[in-house]
Image 1: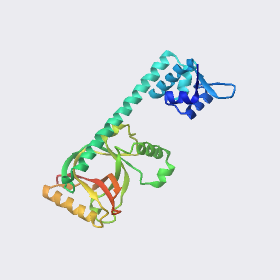
Image 2: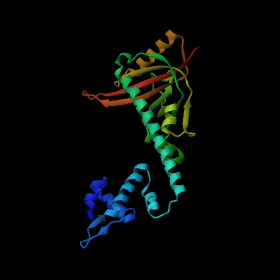
Image 3: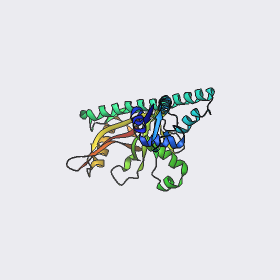
Image 4: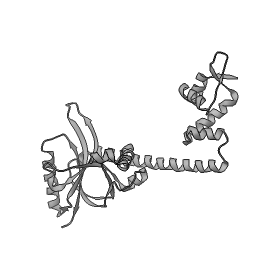
Length: 268
């Protein structure tokens, strides 16, 4: 029995363009009738199911073609399937880490009572990837490669600005990049190279707030953190990290930015 390219595409969830490409590359050759129209026969439909199966596993078209033309051994197939398991497991770890992070952030956004309230927390080890040197971004192949991989999974990694604590209220020098907790980075497959800065675990004063581009925002924040530190007998370690969560434009055309301020501290 003959089946048109349209019917086959609908049946197996392919597009017509994909089937034409598979025909040209030899992955899934078609027949032609007297008018030149493509069609497929009964014997090919089972192989179409096989193509779909191996696509879902993660095989490339070249690998699927190799299966069809006898360039695979049983040992090679087992090895490739084991690699597919590792790839899927890594992606699952990433999705689980992303889900945990998303749940944490939603809970923080909903807990409006805690906005603008400094608190002392135990901060896990963190990784920061800074990309403030634009010349290196363009000319350093390793840095470019890291940047692509970090940006490819920017969430749960988040936007970061780091600055000297004492210069918060003025024109402070900023380091801009991305930051992620070490456990999330490992679960999500973020690369750890010489371009990554490690922030050790320790205590920090953290504050979750909604920024409205206030002119006195940094002065207000600095005073709030200073008062909290003095009241608890703490000393800042020199750097404050501003971690950008989410942003959107409000109805009054003001940009609302949710962020966490994390200032490492120690006892005098």
